[in-house]
Amino acid sequence: MEADITVAALGSADRAVMLEIDQSAFAFDGRDLDPEAETAWIEWDRAWGASRDGTLGGIYTVFSFGLTVPGRPPQLTAVIPAAGLSWVAVHPDHRRRGLLTAMIRHHFDDVREGRRGEVVSCLFASEPTIYGRFGYGLSTESARVSLPSRSALRALPDPGDVTTRFEAVDRAVHDQIVREVYAASCRQRPGNTLRPAAHLDRQLEDRPVRRPAGAEALKILVAERRGQPTGYALLRRTASWGKLSPEGKLRVVDLQAVDPQSAHALWRRALDFDLMEEVTTPPLAPDDRLLVWAGESGPTAHPGEGLWTRLVDVERALAARGYATGIDVVLEVTDDRCPWNAGRWHLAADTDGATCERTTAAADLALDVRELGSAYLGGATLVGLGSAGLVQELTAGALAACSTAWRSPVMPATPYMF
Image (cartoon, rainbow, N blue to C red; front, side):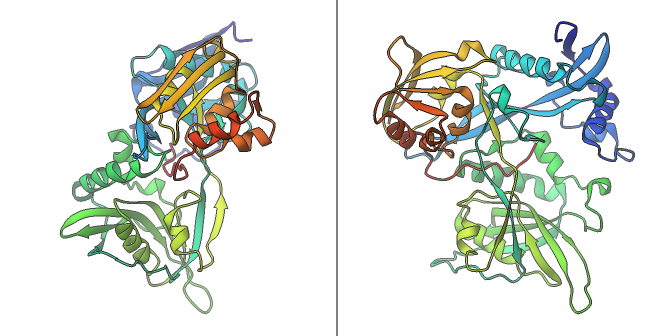
């Protein structure tokens, strides 16, 4: 079915048709959307379309990210180039006819042959059943959390000299603050994306057509210490009135801080607005510090978004991240979609770094590339995957040793969806 499919580059002149295919696939109301504004963040040298007999039926784009991965101790993280797969859409008239498979194959080949040094592809899945068959593994777990307004947070022994201010978002004022704070805070755990400038611009845009119904314009809390920004929280409030009391909702869109004291001050302010009944967070890691501070206030978790990671180049990907302990192991990897990854790999790591090379030595563990993706950011454990029958231990003790080495000291999370 793929023989009559071609995948070719798209350009800015294709904005309208891309938005039309995206709307047809995802069923959103696109009548008031401006194609130029909606596609302003697309990297036009990484936008592609799949056609059959000259008819465009599918699209995809790629964002050039830096991705934080487990670092070499004592560093919590390192940063590697990553391809963020997005805008994957197939028109309903072309579903189940090979277009998606052709686009994913094209994407893997493009990443492998590209000049950006990318070794992994990552995405957020609209439906979790789609991407496992292409070798993607769910690598971060997160949940949006709801807290009653006025919820108490555990006090810090040293709250620091942090002040906060509340303002309407003004890109001329707040752009640099957001960029600098995010650049520092995103390296605090694996799974974060270092966003291109267009993504940071988009985050501060506040077009009315994109606001939730009834919500106010975007606001910002800025945390400072001695005049220097140390954190920010982007948020929206939606007023609502019940029979006896106000029932407003506050949604924190993004909260970043360079230290615990600044994060604590921002969450205290977010939980203390008048007329609000409930506060909802962005996606949080299972060990996020807010859950520690608010554990006695009855937070309600709504599990959902997680990052899916795919090793396009096993050799370079495994050598690029750090490991918690020394490890010397041979992995037998299966990979039906990227055959250059299949075979045995000798992974050796110590405090000086890691190497991964082809070998003919006997394997210690056998697993599919999908499990490598799940464990790559240090969240899912190889022992856990092994207990599910997805990793085969061929040498006694290798599974536990390898699982310990792959773990991150903090759980990975990806609060920014793309």
